[in-house]
Image 1 (tube, helix red, strand yellow):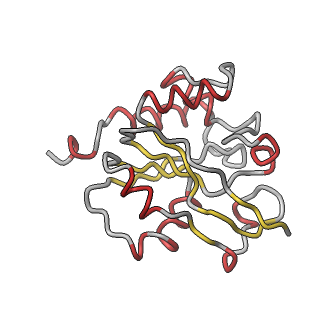
Image 2 (cartoon, helix red, strand yellow; image 1 turned 90 degrees about the vertical axis):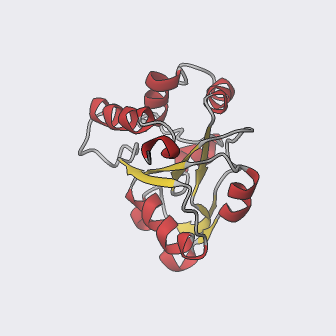
Image 3 (tube, one colour; image 1 turned 90 degrees about the horizontal axis):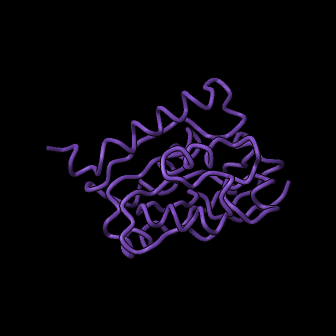
Length: 174
């Protein structure tokens, strides 16, 4: 078992959408890049939606996301885990990231997309209980992890594209 630490968020001024994973996997930690596993669908999906695909250098991908007012982070700041699977995270070891500060610094975020069930569940258990944010829409999307093989890349891309096409939460409420 290893103590695993997440990365700083990818975020720029005026971010409106926050994508939350659970915790970087072994390949991401080794590369010091979000979603670095070559079979993870995150960057191919971001390529289709925003021109931030895996063929683009990592730093340019992050700039493209920021240009589209998209932030990326993980729910967990640290945890104990063997390997990369979310199911291997020791629940009692979880420390969540500081969302109160992030949302205060990024007041335009009006929607949060959870990259999979573990991110959504971890947020609900370790963050949401002390943080009321009625202005933000929360949506769980299918995990881009290669471990989530029940949907292929095309199906995942369609689902993520639908979520982004809905526009900001304030538009959905009308």
